[in-house]
Image 1 (spheres, rainbow, N blue to C red):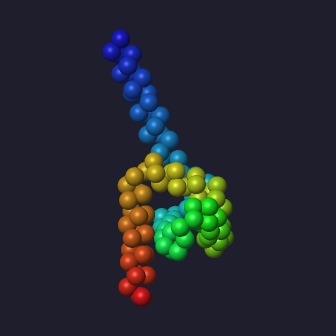
Image 2: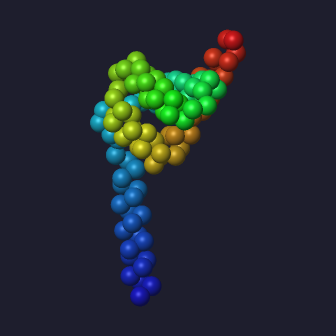
Image 3: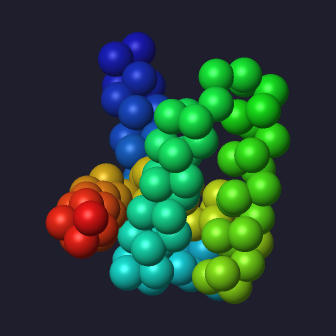
Length: 111
């Protein structure tokens, strides 16, 4: 019985590891993903600081998202698929967010 559970666990690990290595097509490189996320987080912070109405926040954020996606020539599906890839590859996600923090710090220093 224990052997069956061990086999199931082993198969789960093998399939989940394989899934992590498949990059979406088109793939958004680390520097571009960091730039997109930087802009998204800055937009979100600005909206949250200026508006308290949740419906207004959601509508404004959707508008800013579309603008940012157009700026970087990606669509929402491509962004979401790539973000999921990075979520499954935490070391790469850590690198992306390290770049995001660096980008935001540079902007703050300019002010």
